[in-house]
Length: 283
Ligand code: DGL
Image 1 (cartoon, rainbow, N blue to C red):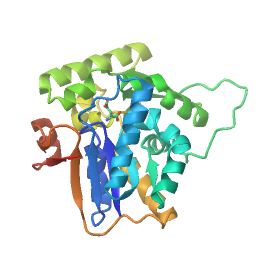
Image 2 (image 1 turned 60 degrees about the vertical axis):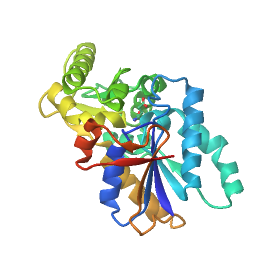
Image 3 (image 1 turned 45 degrees about the vertical axis):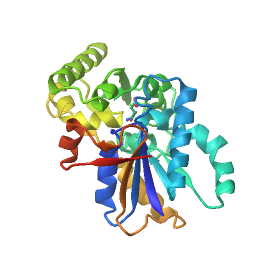
């Protein structure tokens, strides 16, 4: 079998690249739903339906395990699909299939605690010492998943989320460096003003933003640690595969890149990040 990697567009390539480095012999099929990107401003029901269709497409390509390399799909669609769609789909397909998200590993990395851990809540007031900024799409921000799940585990961490409504679309559309840097500086400025001081750590909570991580580094206080979603996701996948021998990652080193949008070469911003030409097939 192959491992499917899904995103609305090119953002998931940041996760895919890390997964391929972690599992060089494994087979991977990447699907970008570029006909419908960006997802971050869409209503929840649409995000659920598009994510379901993307996962199904990857199951049809022979993937048994799909990694949602997309915060928006993970925050809005994953639980619904796991509860209401996957059990029936497994029966119909007659084989084990599963979908894994990107937010659980990111929260584990941000809290330093396994997902199962929920802090015992004491009555006394906890002083928040560690200020964590999360940059995300409007849909992810609205879900409040980062605030809720981190607060359950670490009451000493204060989470501030900055929605960046235009950013994924700009990256998907090959915006210029000057425009991108200006948009990122504005968001970093806005969240810093809201907090009242620069954040201590940050999460680029949309996989597209990792493509321009250097611009975030330049806009944040020098040395601000970034919690790295691709690393966290690769470690989580390794642990999942070790626990679930029914899923194998394949061994022929297959790399396929599919898009629901325009097939062919990807734009300059993506190729600069990828450091090689990259061509997508029609999904
Ligand atoms: N890359 C995605 C994420 O991590 C989606 C961005 C979008 O389509 O708005 O949220």
